[in-house]
Amino acid sequence: MEGLLTRCRALPALATCSRQLSGYVPRRFHHCAPRGGRRLLLSRVFQPQNLREDQVLSLQDKFGDLTCKSQRLMLQVGLIYPASPGCYHLLPYTVRAMEKLVRVIDQEMQAIGGQKVNMPTLSPAELWQATNRWDLMGKELLRLRDRHGKEYCLGPTHEEAITALIAAQKKLSYKQLPFLLYQVTRKFRDEPRPRFGLLRGREFYMKDMYTFDSSPEAAQQTYNLVCDAYCSLFNRLGLRFVKVQADVGSIGGTMSHEFQLPVDVGEDRLAICPHCSFSANLETLDLSQMNCPACQGPLTETKGIEVGHTFYLGTKYSSIFNAQFTNIYGKPSLAEMGCYGLGVTRILAAAIEVLSTEDCVRWPSLLAPYQACLIPPKKGSKEEAASELIGQLCDHITEAVPQLHGEVLLDDRTHLTIGNRLKDANKFGYPFVIIAGKRALEDPAHFEVWCQNTGEVVFLTKDGVMDLLTQVQTI
Image (cartoon, rainbow, N blue to C red):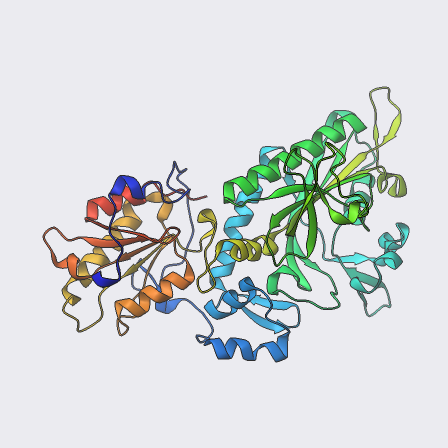
């Protein structure tokens, strides 16, 4: 193994290798450990049988083109498994990462006063007919009838439903506003040609927030507040993003912005000014004039993946459903609205798309399904005596580092060589991989510690490993 290693750097240098090596907030984390012990064993994690490259490519005929890196890697590693065109089983690693992302979203939304709700997936046709979107959405709206012949759709968004809910509250006062109501739920869109895995599917998870304010000025303040929260979210995830002017589309309203991750596989074309802060989706510009409208400088074009979208709706929906409140003068007034979306599963896939290598998944540090993977020696090898040491290290980490409870996985597949398991760990993208190799037999024992986000490797004693991991930041 030592021949595979790069020249080791000192521990202080490693402390800068990841954004997660900063302060942390201790938290309680529920995780069902395997029967017979507290250790989380890799052999117990449910995954489909390992897919070779040719097996992944064979899925192409049945489930569409494998046209992007994130889709191919997520299939190869076993993060997702196809169910039908545009629909995927989300497997344990992906669910863990998604739950962490939802916790970060909850923190950001609740920090600005958001309140979490949960609305029905089935949305009555009459709500959509009232806004004319029953026809406007066309075939992308998944429609069905119940046994009584009543028409519904599987909601791709919930402007109608939430506005009807607010309209049903007959005695709202301006003193109660603003309301910032949001949910994180499954959404459905009948894509004509789903592709790119979780980047463009028929079924997906989305965070959608709807706000209700007492005046246009207050609504603009709320709009800016939510946009700032989105910026904070992507900064915490370590994802480079750009906020661009966008078209309001079928949602409607008078102002809209998209949050885009610049990447070549993106389907949106963006115009960005390198000299000022102007940026826009090309669909909003006059393509015959490609100078920046703000500074008249030349615009550069790039592609991006839309991961968030914000809309200032005004009274477009509140006027239809009569969503009113009593103003400061005791008179009824229509609520000023905004709506704000985040593609939860799309953010996961887009992060993998922009952070990963061609062969190995890389996660935003906060979202990694497990923070550390421990690899004991191969059974029957000269180093097998170190197996007990790394088992004890696993237990000690779990007991002594509160934020890593439920975050440390032991690769107990000791019939495989360390090299093969290290290769797997590299593909999965655990932020830290800790190996009991030859130097674990020294006195004191030294463990190989790989920082996956940078490829740096150090040899650390047990105390050194503990000092390093206590700095890991989790949610």
